[in-house]
Image (cartoon, rainbow, N blue to C red; front, side):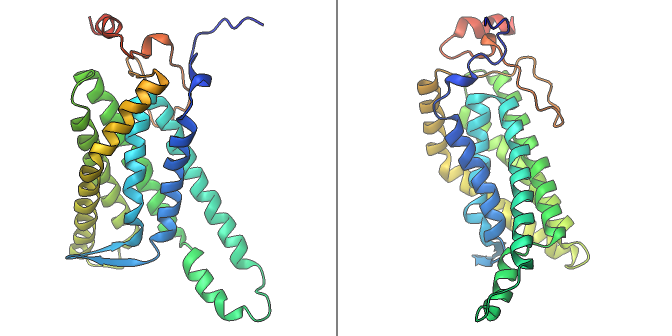
Length: 254
């Protein structure tokens, strides 16, 4: 049957999209498990999930830069859905009767996997807002800078997204439990470490993005995308893919 629609015509040609998407979702979900432990790094007290969580923003940058805002937005919803599903499965596993001889380990199992509803709300809300800001800023900066200043786009968008992420998470999770000054100190510590992490990983992020663009022959620009967090449809056409097509890029802006 002939396909009369050219929308998202290249989606089945991607070789590596599913790998980047998988790593993006994995980093977000596993960071919530690791965050049960608090770590003391320098002057800062931070969740241990910080060793993985910033990678979710890095993969989000790569997804938006190469495959477009619309696909990255879909994956934000996917990551949050997977996180909620993981927590529900963990609660079910905790509720199962412990086997004889394993009762002592039950409490440790509950501590590790029994994420508090308030923390789940905080992490999901913070990540939804933070990564949406990250993807939006990156996609719009790309429209302004075109094919230039990729490093600036990555750092600038992550700095904006993580600022919102940290503030929302810390206030939702700790309001009423910690003094405001301590909440702000925790948020500031996480912000400095996460943005520094992004900066250190920038050469790798740029190299991976350029490699993917070359291998996939894809470089999506969100010319007429509606930047709403509530949309999930992907409606790219061939005109949005400006890989090695300066002429096509100029036509869209002129």
